[in-house]
Image 1: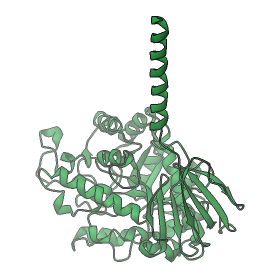
Image 2: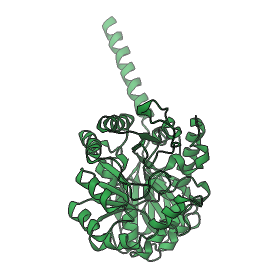
Image 3: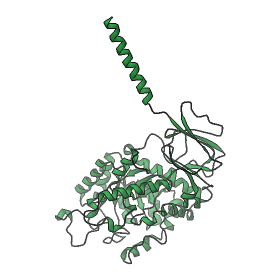
Image 4: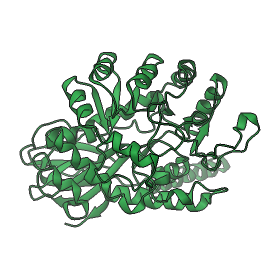
Length: 448
């Protein structure tokens, strides 16, 4: 009898446990988009009227026939009304950590890190509400914000972080006064190094340490500066930065971790040196010649570039303004890259001007001067996603595909008024034209 009672108690406990587990299992959620015309990320025109079912965070079914929502699923039905359903936008060269602040708020001794994190979180939400569901962050300590977004504590896009931009003494991110001793000679950390926006290093050993430091913190790719820059004041654009051996050191360390190196580089010489050292992606490239563009194509190198606004950043009227005038002569680079089938990605590189972050959309629209609207949309969805995937085993988002509307892909979606494959200007006004914004299967905006 005692044994029977013990068995009964154990059985009751097991039943109670199973019931509790069943009750605590979250119910599947679904969103059904009815009567939409799909831009799938690669097509040149929209599909016929289609229905798309999202279950949890992935696209489950795409069909021109009616789709039934799975039983036991909490569903939201969106009446598309013939609108365009397309992948979320992406930015391959974002600067979330300095998008919402001015240079005077960060290039100062002992910057306020808590304030900078807060502003970066606000900018992340604003980017998502402009339709950008994924960005590659190309300099700065964005890891805390990325983790908060992934945990659902902050609203924002998926982030591929680079960590600190790695530069040489008197290079692109060296904003010290000329008389200040480099750290190797006993000098202090610069303000940008204090917040981990950049690392100023020299020599193979220091490059290895800076690269491995970023990887330790969670970088999905590594960013080096190998030519002069537009905002920095001690390195003319023609300057070649880092020796071949220093660049190789970063490539070797990144390769050991299964990822790649991307470099800030404008000129033919610096680009060729970087490619020959094993670099995979060139950022900018506005001062290249066609021979170097062909060299990139033959080597399978990516060009991640921009369409800079003619007005440009409000640089002071000094050498930086003259640098900006030089990089505005960019039309040939786009044309040569398209002509020679270079792997193209697009980003903005907006920084230090919070009032101008809306240009993330308008600069995208500027691509229409070089290509069809459908081609531009392919670059900022499918093609950018192919670049992000170069991070290999460092890729934090592998449950589904990014940048496409396909079964099994992530449900990062925009429902748009009009046909952006024919009229790219639609993208310039997301507040008006983006009726639904979804990321990871969750709706963040719905004005229907």
